[in-house]
Length: 167
Image 1: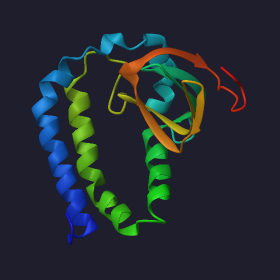
Image 2: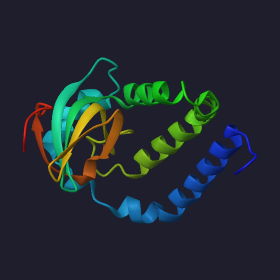
Image 3: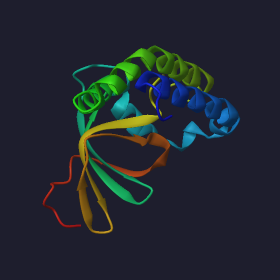
Image 4: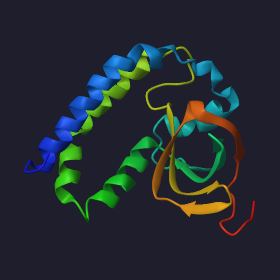
């Protein structure tokens, strides 16, 4: 990838991702959405419907890590991520913008094929956090735009863990 433009690099990585996606599609499609807590899915429904102003303070446990912060729509999360990338790498930000429609199409296709739970629609595989606090092994880590696979959530609570709270 040395000597190639950011757009070429991102395009190549996107093509590799699509190839992996197709190769593993059956395995991913076989994973049960029924493992997602239906009450959590209902709580997140306004955010999943793409309400640009919808947000909720939420704490989840995923793979043993506590993640606590503001949950927003995927669009708001993508805008924040874009804002993080653009100042340092405008070429990469432009390349990602160019690929956005292809990624949207892939998300919609995946959602249509995993329609086992009617509460879960196009972007419901992930919970999108802005500025969450991660707590793991006694360490506190502040992150920017972060997303968590909804199927990995083993526990959740409405509200945010205060940054200075010891667990």
